[in-house]
Each structure stands twice: as C-alpha cells, then as structure tokens.
Length: 411
Ligand SMILES: [Zn+2]
Image (tube, rainbow, N blue to C red; front, side):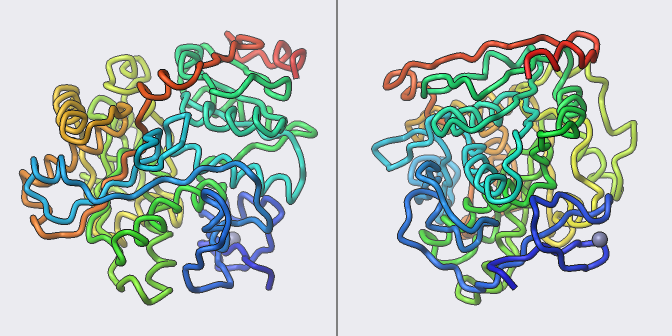
C-alpha cells in the first residue's frame, strides 16, 4: 500500500485515493494510514502531522492550532485539567491563523489532496468561515477556486492576502443548504470538483489535527471533548483522530466523550440524538426562515452527515456522546466569561462550545479533575483587525432563482 488508503465504512472495501469522495452513498470513507504512530515531522504548521493527512507532499502555507492549559476560565469553572485548542490569531501564544477559524486547518490539506490527484477547480459551498479559509489559501498560492455562499454571509468573506484572479465568488439568495446544492451542480461540470464536505477525508483529517496537537500538550487523550457543530463534521474528525491515537498506544485507550453543541434555534442533530433517532426526520429540521433568529447562522445545516455509516450518529454512539442545544443568552454569557477570563475574543460558534462546557459543569457531566479539551474553533478577530487589512471579496454573480446560466458566464 501507499502511505494511506481509504476504507468504505459500509462495504469495508479498500480504495486507492483519486480524490475519491464515495463508494457507498450511505457511508463515509475513512483514511487508513500505514504509519500507526503519531510522527511529528520537521515541517511548518499542520504539515508536521502530514503522516496522518491524506497527501503525499506538503505546501508552504497552513498554520496549525495551538493547545494550552487554561488558567482563566478553568478557575472560573473549577476545572483542574482544562485544555484549550485555539484556532485563530493570538500571536503571543504562537497562534497565527489569520482567518480566525479552524476551517483553515481543512483548506491546505484539501488543496494539496486535489493537486496530487486531478488538478480540477475546487468548488466550495460555505456559510462564510470555510469560504474565508479556502480563499485565504487559494489567494496566497493562486489556486483556482469557486466559492458558493449565501448572499447574507458575504460579509464574512474576507482575507488578509491580496485578492486573487483565481477565485470566483457565486452568491446565492438562499441559505447554506441552497449553496451546497448549487455547489454540487457546479462541481459535476467538466473541469470542476466538488470539494466534498464531510465526505472529503482531507477536511476531516485536517480538522483532526486539533486532537493530534492537543495530545502533544496533554501527553494523553482527553476524557472529554467540547465543540460547537453545524454539520458535525468536526465531531467526526475528533473521533477519528482519537481512534488513530488509541492505535498509537501511547495516549491511552479510551475514546474521549464527545460533547457537541448546537444553536438551540436550529438543532437537527440535537433533536434527532436526544430522541434516540438514527436518522434526522423532517420535524427535527426547523424551517429555514428561523435561521435569522440564530445566535450564529454559521451553525445552520439542514442536511448534516448524521445517519451515514461513520457519520455523526455513529461517532456519538461510539464516544458516549452528548449533544447540547444552547440558547442565545447562554451563548452571550459564555462568550463574555471566556473573553474576560482568557483575554482573547472568540467567534460566536466557539461561544456555543464554551456554553456547553459551562452547562456540563453545572450538570456534573464532567468532574473537576477530568482532562477536558475545549475546541475554540475561532477567535482573535480583533487582533487581526489591528494587524492586517481585511480585504473583502465581492460576488462575481448573484444567483436568485437557481439559474445556473448566469453562473456559467463568470466561470
Ligand atoms: Zn462501499
């Protein structure tokens, strides 16, 4: 075998990678790496973990998250072993992700995987943070990229690099799911490749770097892992990285308990999981008109990879998972608590994760001595604004009625 292979979690077949996104429709593929030990390579950023990324080479760009032991919010919550994984901009601690989101862990690995296989133009649907991360990497390296984004999320589409001619922005008058649907159509056209979302192992293994980086600080797997989710792909990624670390043997043999948090206004995964459903049914999914009531619409996804083999429900089941539905006020309080005690601003999705941790402490879902990893998936925006100019990307075309003809003209 090469450095890695893909396994279909439905039929168990081993597949060699050609930027392959599926074998069976109702199952994810999972990467299996030849190297069973966590190897730290002498490469910058995320590439030090490249033995466990589905790529052969590496590139210059790709900043890593940092992990540090909390003193501030840990004291507030009475926790003795709380670690924070921070994907954002916090230079004094060595965090340099300038788009302030852990989506920047996914983009370089995805581009590298794409380059090594088909060199087509990647098409990425996004509610904003993912588009920003992919645009940041594409603009730096001149990679061709098509972004499909709801018009209402365009304000999140900025980069600190100079904009590049290689990027096209297609705005959709609709929600994130509408953007995903249009992105799929473009991705099937000649010369284009749908990035793949949860089906893209480079995205999941890229996000898995959070867990890999954390064990370097903790010297063990955490007992609990907290993260805010929309699609839940980050939860799957944390789970899969944990399986690899258990396979290594040096970090313990217990899967960290997944504590995943949704915005209570729009919480299909919470609704399905708390009612013991293996599938999301229509009544679990609020009408998209409710999205504007959310604390953060970044976490809205009407069709998360929940019931797929190897998807969110399977990860939750294997990891004794808990799902939280966090209200607006709870999230606001958690954001303030974190920012006051840790001294760095965080993005709203991260505040949802902090709120879940606060609730878990109140409900005794965690003990004060437990080793806990809190994934702060985005932060440091106020510092980035001080240090850099934010270059906003405009839409090349706005699609109002799903009419793809207008799109063709700008591609
Ligand atoms: Zn299969």
